[in-house]
Amino acid sequence: MRIATPRGEVIHASTLNLSPAGLQIGGDRETAAAISTAAPGALPGVPVEVGVSLEFPAAGAAVNEDGSADGGTVDGRCRVVFLRRISERDFRIGLQFVDLPEDAAAALRRGIERLLPPP
Image 1 (cartoon, rainbow, N blue to C red):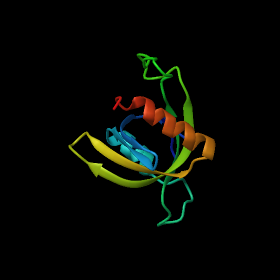
Image 2 (image 1 turned 180 degrees about the horizontal axis):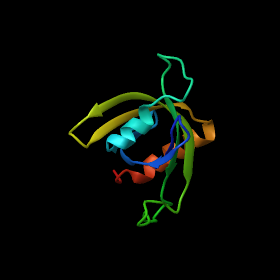
Image 3 (image 1 turned 135 degrees about the horizontal axis):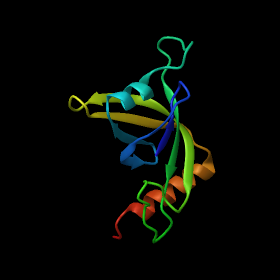
């Protein structure tokens, strides 16, 4: 997945958990700092928000070696709701969707359904 940070950087992160409400990503210290640092001029106490772009494989398609997928892309905005240090170099960041257009929300639900094992 790609994340547009408040400072305008675009970084890549690994999605560890995904739901229609949000996601959890993993990263190193630099990733955590880039995602959790507010934009220049932001008021203290204002939640940090980031742009996200998730790629889902098409039905029956595999994920490419570079992590991209030959399926749909879901773009939206998320609020950083937690940042946890797991080890010296390993962090978990929780992101909650705050701006996800209805068509993107529907694409997200379809993408999640495709990733689930059959019942």
